[in-house]
Structures are given as C-alpha cells and as structure tokens.
Length: 374
Image (tube, rainbow, N blue to C red):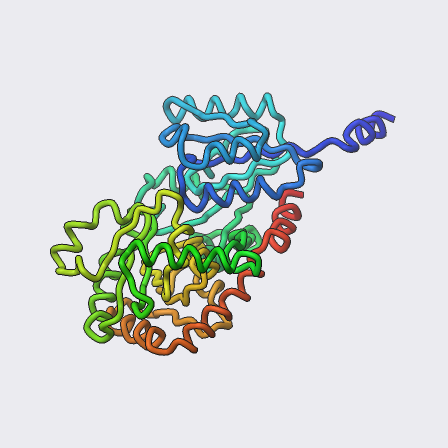
C-alpha cells in the first residue's frame, strides 16, 4: 500500500530539473539554454536555473531566461567553497529529479551529494577549457557519469580523455529558422537592401561576412589575411565583420590598409539583423563546438565557407559548401573567389545548406533531451 500511495501521489507531478550555467551573457550556450527551456514541456517538467557567476547579471539574455523558467532563477555568489555550499542548499530545497550542467566549467558541481542524475556537458573545444582551468578543476569537470556534447568532434575529445563512449550523448544545437521561412523571405530581402545601403554597397558589390565574439578562437587575423587575398583577385569584393569582435579592430584594419574594403558593425540588435546582407559567410574559427553563427548565416541565405572545426562537418555534410582542411589564406581565398564569381553555385550552396537546417529543429532534438533526462 505505501508504494501505491507513493505512485498515486506522484502521478501528474512534473519532474524538477536544475539547469546549471556559468554566466548569462550573449554566448551560444546561453541561447541553447533559452531554447531548451522554451520548448521544454512545462506540464511534464519544472525547471530552475542556477547561475554560478553574476558577471553579466542584469544583461545579456537574462530576461528571456527568467521568462522561460517562470522566474525560478538563482545566482550563486562568494568563493568557490561558498558557491558549492549554496548549490548544496538549493539541492536540499529543490530535491530535483535531474541536474544538467550547461557549461563545462560547472560540471564540477556533480560532486555535491544527493544527486542521482547529474548530466555534464561540453559545448566548446576541450583544449580551450584545459588552458583556462587548473588541473584539479579540469579533472573535476570530467567527473560526471554522463555528458551532453553538441558535436561528434567534442565527443571524440572526451573519449581521448578516457571518458567511455556510452557515457556521451551527442545532441546538436537547436536552431529556430527565421529568414529562410517562406513567410519571411520578403523581410530578409528588405534587411539585405537596408544593410547594404547603410554600408554604401552597390548591387554589384560582393560581400563576405564574418565575426562573432571578441575571442582568440574566432581567429579574425585569418579572416583578414584571407579577404586581403580575395581583394587582389576580385575587385567587386568587400568584407564585413560583425559582433563584439568589431569593437577593437579599427586600428588593425587601418594598419593593413583595408579601411576602404572592410566594414565593421557591432550589430546591437543581434548579428542576425545584419547577416542577410552577405553573399558569403566565412567562419574563420580555430576552435568551436557547434557554431550557432554558421547556422544563422545559412538561415540568412549566405553561402558558407568554413574552417574544419567542431561541428561544422555535421552542419555542412551533404552540401557543396567548402570546408577548409588547412589554414592557408591563399587556399581559402581560392574557394571564396570561386563562389563569388559563380552566382548559380552560390545559390545552390545556399539552398542545400538551408535544407539541412531541418536537422537542427526543436522537434528533432528536444525528444533526445527528454529521453536522456528520463
């Protein structure tokens, strides 16, 4: 009878989930957490978000996260030991059925007691985390019994660290199509014309767009080396760097003598508000997990050219989009110039890549999350 009472008492109750994340800025991990919360069936699951740093408190994506978790958001402050104690207190108060770490750096919280279902994650290059963490913190971040990664490449990195393959689940980034939907094609064209007009570009100018966050992993110098080669071969070519990376680049652009060919745009309304202006999107990164910016560029109608990093092969496989296996500006320029000079090829690559976006829909990927949560 007690067992029947327990089962009956828990029928219809939603499962409690704690989502741990390092900070709430404007990065790809925060956007993925927001989409997870948005599409999580609230009649089945009750989420709470715990943020382990108040660095970006009050900014970034916080308001959207608050809305998706019904205001159940808590910041941890103090020393690492104090944060650990506060997290343990939250566990006692919440009694969650599952805890998901959305940042590799918060995986170490798996050491807190009374957690039968803790899932760690890796969403960016493990080599970067290894450089940023102490050896002890890095080892603790590898301690969860299960992991979610967003690309096969990252799964391989964990396996190389001794994590058994069956402990690692690959769930690519969720992506919400915007401009590639039929009902938004007119809007995409309006944004394209408006952005190009604001940059002083003519219809015949060919625009290469890149950028993202202001981090070494984006390798903006490689982007600039490559477009410099393109400019020598294609007089109609121009380039645009968008996002936070553009903030500190004016002096670098002038020193290279590129101020008349390379434009900068901080994109305060979001990079997606600028991307439709592109003819080609060039991802120059040297380290990625599953690059959200590449998915957004595809959605905007740009033909992508990408370095061979993270999950780019999973995004571009089965299409004619070039993946650069070496970081040689001359070779990268060859690929870009070929696409710029062939409008039919450019359109074909764009359409092939847009069709791939269905593989990253929430209808495909939320099912995987729910199966893993159990």
